[in-house]
Every structure is written in structure tokens, then in C-alpha cells.
View 1: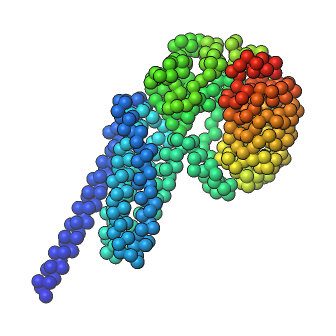
View 2: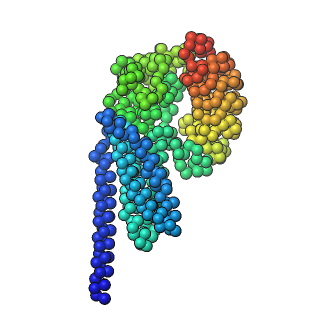
View 3: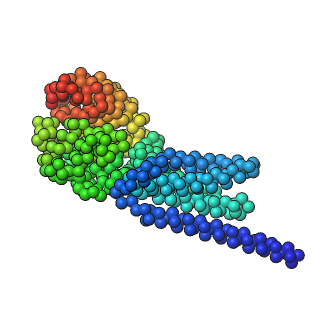
Length: 480
């Protein structure tokens, strides 16, 4: 009896030592993971090319641990009746941890090597670190769970790991596809629990050449790599103050000196040069866009100037003073109700109600069609800007838009619009900005815009009407 008791005590002692060693091992690895971002600090500067070469395998590798973690709960549930699957679940957990660690390393190589930084990059990195620490805890606790101890700890850790995986994947998707990657198609009622990203804008400069001619160029060509989500080389170009602040290499705009402005230097390099911008296969700036940037910088790069020599649309037509649209506050209950049901937002231009509303569809773009647009007709007199880019609207949208009598700016880029019905916009006397890029609008359809008295900014990039020929240029000049 005494001998059996001593054996039992010895076994328990070995188990305790084993568990203690596993926890010490897990804590040591966790400490190393937490120290990684401090050892490889993201400074916004590009580093060795071989780091970028290896780092670019990160997007491919990341799918391995994701798939294993999604499979793991099903294996654990099925393992309650089939012991073989429980053993497989343990193997999958260890493999997910190993591949996750490799993926994290390659992700750090990508960010450090390419000089990427920013809030979303940091969140994605720390999410990956937290996930690995949680998986280490799962590996450590799982043997006790199998033996009948700590029955609730392992399942709870597994649930937390899956939630962390979802959040971290969202941050990664935001880097590649935009900040609304996972929330874009979320049903309206759920969106109340997930506030939209910051709506900081350059609203103070509305009506200026910068807002009407320069900002759209930067937004279309540069912000994907130099915006709020992703700051390549520590540079952001989505807001005027940040544009003028520059990045890790210093100022990128030298007012009145285009030749010393880094932005112009990079976009005018040979496309084969490794410093040519925009990089990563994005569409280069056109000759007209480069000319507009040069003229704006030469004139002082002002955010408020309303006319600038060399930018024809701005120089030939002085911007109209903004007309008040009335007080919409009595409709606030209806506005909140339609936002909950449709998902699109009506955002105030400023704290002054008479400055109007902006219709934003970014969270529901692909599902926002002409029927949904028609439901906002009730608020038409107060809408001064409609952001319908990349939505599902087509030429039928002009029936509703013709009722937006105070509309000043209309975004229809990337839609199915062909130009049929453009004449219905002739009632919009305040319309000065129209973006039809990425549509099927032809130069013949532009003739219908002659009835819009103040229209002076028309964007037609990647359309049949893109001003690449003399005939198209003559048509645009006649419209102006």
C-alpha cells in the first residue's frame, strides 16, 4: 500500500512538473512574440529587397493557419465520439501554431522590408501576435482538458482564438481591399454596432482647386498605399495637412517648386524605375493629371485657391458661392430610420444644417441600386453631394438624381452608367463636379451635359470618352 501510494505521488509530481514546464515554455515564447515588434521596429522606410521578396509570400501562407483554425472546432466536436479525430485535432492545433508563427515572421518581413506602417498595419501585426499567444495557451491547456480537468478553459480559449482570428483577418483585408472589407455588405441593423471609420475630410476647402482637381487625383491614384489604413514610407496623401507634412523621406510638396517636389519626381520617372509611383501595378497618372499637379504646386499648393493658371476648368470658371439648402433637422428621425434600413449614410457637411448633407454608400456599395436611391428622394433638397461610386446604379438613377436640385458633386465612377439619360441632370443648376470614370460613357453622350450651366469638372478616366483624342478634347471644351 505504501509503495503504491509513493508511486501515485511520484506520477502526480511528474505531471505537475510537466505542466509547469509547458507553461514556462509557453510564457517564454509569448515574451519573445511580444518583443518582436520592438526588435523589428516599423520605421516607415523600405529596407533590403530580399526582405520584400520573402515577405510577399505572407498573403499566400496566411491561408494555411486560417483554414486549420476554422477546421479545429469541428474536429474537437467530432472527437467526442471518434477518438481518432481527437488525435487529429491535436495535430492540427500544433500545425496551426507552427504555420502561424512562420506566417507572422513573413508578415513582419513584408512590412519592414517595404516600409509599410500605419494604424491598420499595427493592428494586424498585434492581432497576429495575440492569436499565436492564445494558440500557445490552447496547446498548453488541451492535455488537461482531455484528461477531464479544466473542462471550460480550453473551449473558451478556442472561442477567443477564433474571434481574434476574425478581427485580425479583417485588419489584413482592410490593407488589401479597404477598411470596410468585412463590414461592407453587413445588414443595416448590424451596422449600428460597428461604427464607420473616421469621416475626417478636407471639408474646410470645399470649392477650391485642391478639392475639385488635385484631391481626386491623389485619392484615385495614391491613397491605396498612402492613406489612413496603409502608410507606405510613413506618408499619407488623403488629407491636405498630411500631404504637406510629408513622410519619412521628408516633404513631398515644395510649394512653387515642382522640380523639387518628390511627388512629381516619382510619378514622372520611367515605369521601369523601382521608385516609380504609383507602384504595385496601379494605374499611372495621365499627362493631364501630372500637368494639373505641376500647375497647382507652381501656384503655391494652396488648399483654398479657387483659380489657378494652368488648370483650365478652374481658371475659366470662378466657383459659385455655396447656396444654403435649408434646415433638415426636423427630418432627423426619418434620416436615422432610413439609414438603419438601407445602410447608406446621410452625413452632415458641417455643424450648420444649411450646408447640406452628403449621401455616402461605401458600406453598402455593391448592393445599393436605383431602388435604394429612390428611397432617399424625400431628402433630395438637402443633399449636396452623392457618393454613388462603385454602386449597382445604372442609367435609371438619373430619374431620381434630377430631383436633387441642390446637388453640387456627383460620383458615379465604376458604375453601369452608359450616359443614356444624362440630359435629365440639366435641372441641377448647382452641379459643378461629375465623376464618370470607369463607366461606359461615350463622347457622344457628353453632349447631353450642355444644359448644365455650372458643370466644370468632368472626370472620364478609363471610359470610351476619356480625353485621349482631339475630338474628345474638343467636345469637353465645348461643354465648358
